[in-house]
Image 1 (cartoon, rainbow, N blue to C red):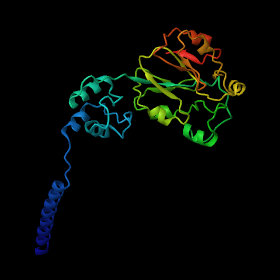
Image 2: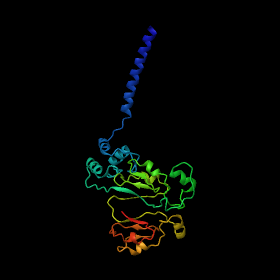
Image 3: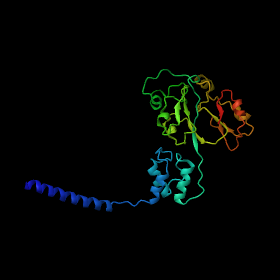
Image 4: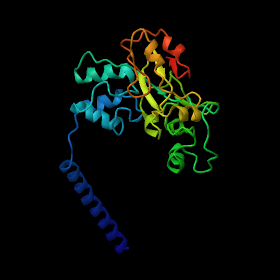
Length: 265
């Protein structure tokens, strides 16, 4: 009986001592946190998408309070979130222009030739490592949906033509799809942008091969730039680049393109 009693007493004493030590350690190693960090964290989207360029919402909240990230850095939260963060920080005039993703490829099943049947791991990353993609065009969308799988907002889905479709109403421009795409085919544009954009990323200058690989590939003819009344199309990279500060959304370039590479947003 005495043994049981002494065991209980010893256990209580040890627990008491450990409690005191834990309390001391908490005070010794306590790190003061700026109360603004918690306030900022509360107004963020909570998506932890990484669109701000940091590890998640906690990291962004800490960084923005320290001045290491902009108040409008939470792309998922949009303008309302940016305004709330700016108010917490005592800043004013913060402007946010929502962005959306655009797939710079139109190599559908009907347009782009296939190298053969791929039976490996069904991810774009794996297919790219094994055979540089499944299509004859080395720059084209592989079509196995890595981008769809990583989108935290359900803004992407695979179309019947074998290409991912962006739901503009859901996309916040977080960049997850771009990071997942081994062909780097996603571009990010302001959601309210009006004008033409190229649905091709083939930078090869071998015109016959481009047409052989994909019927909608840009052959670098430059007709779009020549026809543009505002001279807002740059062909220096081989792919039409539009200066939206000059573009009037007239559609002349779209109509002039022999391969229908350009479309109006």
